[in-house]
Length: 108
Image 1: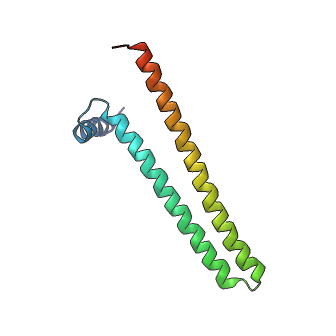
Image 2: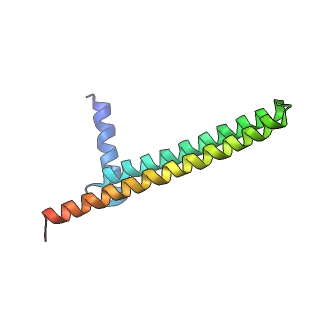
Image 3: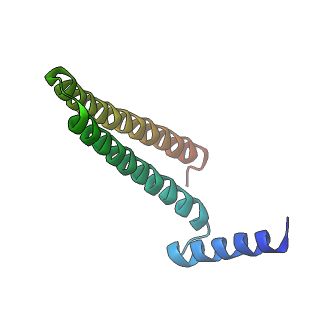
């Protein structure tokens, strides 16, 4: 590991501790970054789908293509949202299971 990489890592750890005030602050910051990136990816995909829809609407002459593309974009958006909700539910269930397991190990 180079000195630059080590310095970056140490500054990230220090920033995470300062930001959260805890020793496991780096984990919380990484989790927040992952959630933030997931939201950003969703927004970018939505923007690309919207631009694609505009291109199709500007160039297509058939009503079937026009409304079919609109229905497809709406369907993909709904499916993406359902997949995100299911994934978040699985993550929350796994976290709850881990908390119960940790509480069972440490009956303080």
